[in-house]
Length: 467
Image (cartoon, rainbow, N blue to C red; front, side):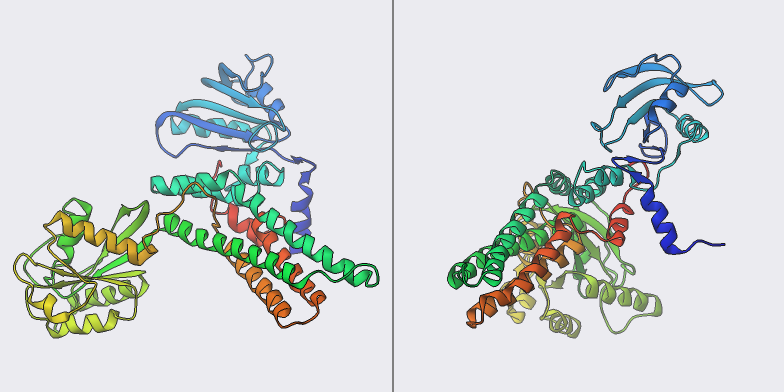
């Protein structure tokens, strides 16, 4: 009979006994392919037994010591000679006994090492399971665990620094301090409710000031999280404009290389081209698009359709126009389409003339040439000003990283604003207790003190196997 979902969940929960798991996992921890070394990682209650079987030359495993020895399979045949590093529980990454086997970087050797471990009773680790065990064994909070995946996925130095700041776990401590402040206010209110004749109501002005301070701290967390998201995810910029305005030339100039084909023939670019640059530590994804015009053949029209989709999904529109000639209908229409969204307007070919730029009269437009370094610096500065208001991210400070954390802070802010409105209306102070408890519970999703199973699954599903 097929087991029910609840029964399977109960069995999964029973795998964890105290600080140890009921089984032992193994996986290759280094990227696929050939290299100088490959690392096979093992964690769980049977690590010492597996080490005795696979490292017959090592009589005693010394903690945090590199043993150089033969590594054998389940039948005693030598797989390789390499290093074995043992970390006993609880002083290891996962909080369990762990073993790392450093073998030569042949995919065959690494795979054979894992196969031998499985034959001796280990099982393949699931994606992120080593870090998940570290979280469940109290070695790191959920926010820090998610930062591990961010650090692995970082594509710029700034993103790596931002992830490293979260890895320290400072955000959970900060939010727990905010929850403690809410608890103190609730206790004051509860005392007045339970013992009205002995405990006076808390001072309304003082309580409102304390809540205002908590709200200010949460607003800062929310703001830092938005900046951190830009550093982590980057900003998409769609380079749009009529044919022959210089869009591809601008892409090449910003990249410093000939990435896109440049031609005087209208309609040369028929598909989107995406490349990335870094501006003030933020990754900016530049999408060069087909020129927009009404009279186009079927193939060019398909490219224009992709241009419009790229424009709709981009955070910023970088509108490139030929500033040397009077504005045509296509240019005017594009300016109208983008006037109500975040955009940077660039009138190119100013070295030839500025008739179109003067005609448009757009106050904050950039007038210049893709051939001039000063123009490129102005475009970069304008993208930073529009995309993240020119604010250089503080990469040393932990920040909100996931949608769950954002939602939690937004929910807490909503509850606290409702509590302050109650106080300012002159209603009884004890009526704010429910809102404060809602805010306290919401912030538990940031610290990891409250974490639903689907949230845990979502966090660790992002990891590669072996981490």
